[in-house]
Image (cartoon, rainbow, N blue to C red; front, side, top):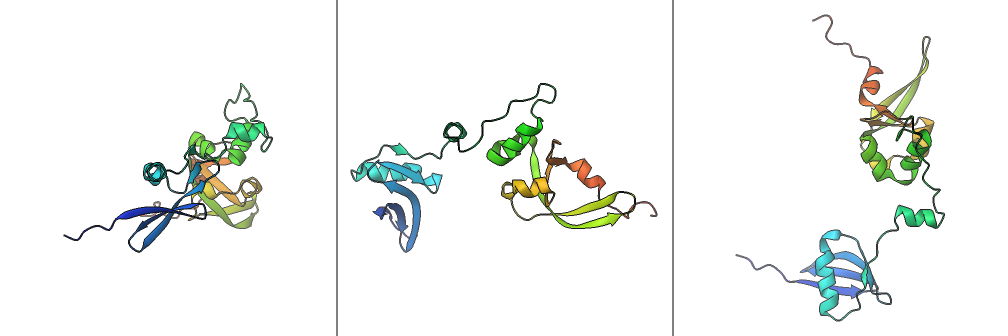
Length: 182
């Protein structure tokens, strides 16, 4: 049985590097003056902290990304709108704020499952302009708020809001030619 190569950690120009044989992987950014680390891969949190402590480097904790509350306090984003009691979490201002400033919560709350891109617009005598969409290969999180509002992208979700479409509504726009004359 072949022996596994030893894993070593080093710090080069503020980057903590994990080395195993010829393989090198940047796992964290290290600020020596503050003693804080910003992990690039959370799987290596414990070994990185152990390395810093074993080698006598200053360690004061993890550098966390700014929370929404901290960003609001610094006026980087507008304050979260209040819910209208009649429509609760489907209040248009709240839905748009979440879609712009808290994508993870927006996706989870409304059950966003799919991102679709508009392929073309067709003129119809009865309905006027009809947009046609195709499923995007990009992850749902990559949507662009401005494109969703403009109709260039469409978000398919479990719950219908002012900027999401429920899957059943999306399917009604499709034309099927099967099943009737079998």
